[in-house]
Length: 202
Image (tube, rainbow, N blue to C red; front, side):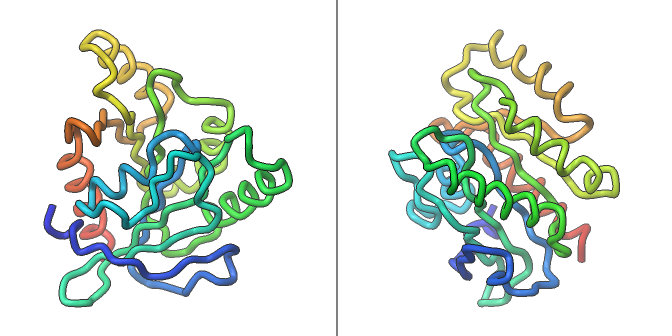
């Protein structure tokens, strides 16, 4: 877990050409605007405002990169991608973000894993399914995939079991975990998984 706590802001990029070329493993966090993406990143890194968690969904409008590594050395990078699907965001902005995100997921050479966040009370949406189709070829080629079912504290035991079963079918062989920032459920598991994937890549 200590490795995750070394996270620090690296850069922000409104489009792909502003992203630095990196050779270290990169882990992308994606999901609907209200899935709890920023809260998840802040919980994993134990930093309250590393990723901006707004009460107004759709706040993140660029790809934000956070470096991981002790003593200022970068061993891996977390990428916080724009949330998608929020109705109040202008349609033109939605389309632009979706294009930027799709291009990033398909072309980013040092991308080693994708973490998709989903509120299990609503399940995977049509936009989540589209994202899965976009990344499927890369997953088949070895890209790691983790589906985090956020806000798990709002589920009872039987609901959690059912949500996991459904998500495992939808994840197509990827890792699936329950996650609650409030109860710290699944936090250590997710952090260790990312750490192991980073080590496998070096």
